Length: 402
Image 1: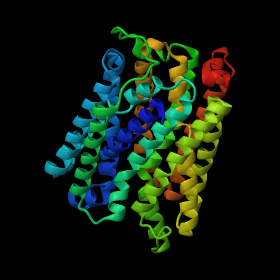
Image 2: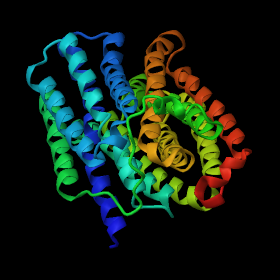
Image 3: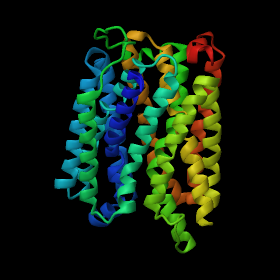
């Protein structure tokens, strides 16, 4: 195994473990709802709090150029350890919604140090095949995000033990980063603090359109991940019971989200071969179609619902890494970390709205139509990436493959 692929493996393993913190509370929402007496707003709030914390963390990081001025490896290690501590505190001490929201917010702030710096480190190891490399990294993130659903899907652990398990996995990820991860030979130039660089990604046409495409993608992604388990549970209830190929809703949700790792790998290969804009537009067209279609399976045969959900889970994440890869190719080299962090911050800010939107839509129009609203994002994202494709600077993408 070459040093670059060894580092890719190690970073992916670290991300897989670290990102188990993200949906740890979402995976135990049924238990929290019963114990804390949560309504729809409180349940959504626990997921939105992580997004809000991540936004604050990435915004602060971008404003001070944190991943460019300081060691990206050190930023990752500290962020993961503090995130594991905040998540562990939720398990050990929280007994009501208020403290739960604060600790989930703190977890999100810390995770801002776990994700964008990892993409920057990976870019220092890969020039050729960068789309595939970052795609594999995001695939690991995808599986990590699904792990909290696996724990209640396979075990009868109480919710506090589930959260502590996620924190333990995150600490393993931090140890991997600290002990084994290093930057590669294609390092970016050293940067000086410049608060203006946080907004520079929106100042040039190419990076701006790549960010707009990413916003369309993010409108759909996290709302689907956050509410899929609830949709699958409600669909079985409407049918009068059943299983998803032998799996309960938590287990089926893990399968759907985790299989997105295959989409990340395939998207990376296709993006390096066919071009960034080509792959992202195809993936958003397919995922948007699934968002429109899955509601028609509600209350129907579980195998059909699961099949559409798997198709959605694979296509919804297949393009995610390629928006970030495009930013590394279009932005000023000295501030790639800041540009990635700014893009990520904007995307996650938008997810707060789409996550919040689903429960009132369910109340008004039911699960059959609620997810259809998510198709708006991919439609607009396709427009943005089509415009990027027509620009001269698009020739810098994927070695000239637009």
